[in-house]
Image (cartoon, rainbow, N blue to C red):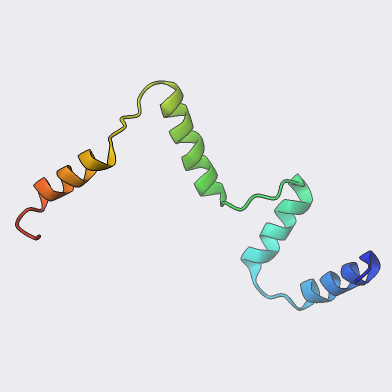
Amino acid sequence: MDIQSLKINIIHWITELEDEKLLQEIQDIKQNRDISFISTVQQEELDTRIDEYLKGKTEFRTWDEVKANIRKRHKNAI
């Protein structure tokens, strides 16, 4: 499919589209020219976590520590 056909195909698809969320995402792409596969809320959470990591406020545990903690808290359920 050549570029003109692709454009026409997309135009027809958009004119039929009723999904407001998807239309807003298309508008965001048009305005930002930044194609992001995560929502604004997800991006904000990611930014917060990166900031906490850079400030040294993040605790890390090994997978074995996580499993032991879960088993300890839920030993009666297992």
